[in-house]
Image: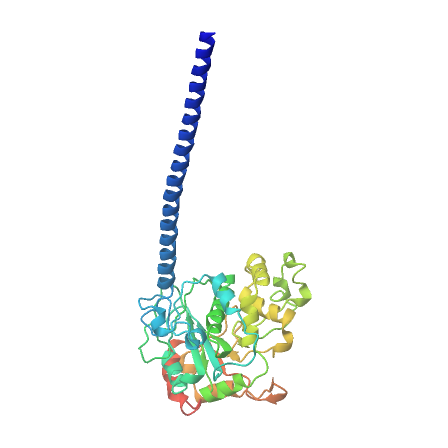
Length: 394
């Protein structure tokens, strides 16, 4: 009996110690949990604080301004000091340098305000877009043409990427090269360069008309006449016609079906002029440009077919179906005639200005059908400068 009572007391002691150990273990785990929780909370606070600081720093950095007071792209001065969200910076970019991809550029250029009224005194401008292989031999002639009309035009240059145009600071061509890509004659890269010029010009909301020119183009009227003619037109000037020969319909690829049908296929001069709404449609297109990129290859020339076909399919009512750039195809072959200095006379320029034919302008007929002309060799510069004041009136 005594042994049984002793065993019972030992069991009770063991049970009490076991409970005490359980209570102490629970307290240890509880305290450890509190310590781990506090440590984790402190680490998370530090992490998110650093991320917030990083985000704040990158935001300020990305909105710094460049050396130009009106540009916020590559900056050292915080935007808060120069108001980089000002209307002037948004509406009239002064620095044409940017790092946008074509897709980003075309998306940005396709933005169109739904509100029709402008919250600023808008003076419509003509965008002169030069697609060149390098130098501009007629830059002195164009500088004379543009003189004293700075409020009414913008200039954009698409040159080879590694080419730098040497223009003086006072020239309207100074700093007007856009980010460009290499262009090969007869390939879709020509149409791509045209769209790139349009997109960069569309970033300026004051640009209302867009004319494509080459380094061999010249004006045959003064700026006032050209500006009034283009701004006053209700239509774009894009040559677009049905050519039933192998040089027109013969270039059509049936793999473009069902998106582009043969009866919709058009041909026209590369050297166009168009209004802002039409330019926006062109840069907004992806589907049909990709079709031309895939299926229109030599001897199909996208620069002669893409825009004429696209406008014929969707915006034909906005087009005058003619070009305002005179070209001499009388010699035949894949390229127009080149006019040297000896060919440039007063009678020659007058014949371009008024060749005795009439063309449609809005709802009327006019004898002024061509505002520009090509192709002219560099040797034509001097005689053209001599005739500019007496014949072309600038």
